[in-house]
Length: 97
Ligand SMILES: [Zn+2]
Image (cartoon, rainbow, N blue to C red; front, side, top):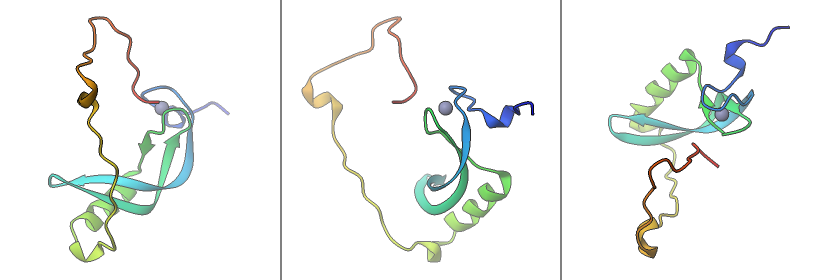
């Protein structure tokens, strides 16, 4: 069977696999995390892809404050605390990990 374009990550060409994820969804300048979202996830860089139906439902959830069931927090650090480290012209970069 010929692999479809939608089987591969558009950023790194890793393989997408069906998974259930905690999705990060931005709505009106706010970020809401939504658990148990069906997505296709790149096995190389971790990029998450959603279908139109899933995306629409996430928007419905995000705009309803009654759907918030908790708050998550993440550690925050300051990269610049160790002094400046600027990218050099032509320095090679990657998107993630
Ligand atoms: Zn990828």
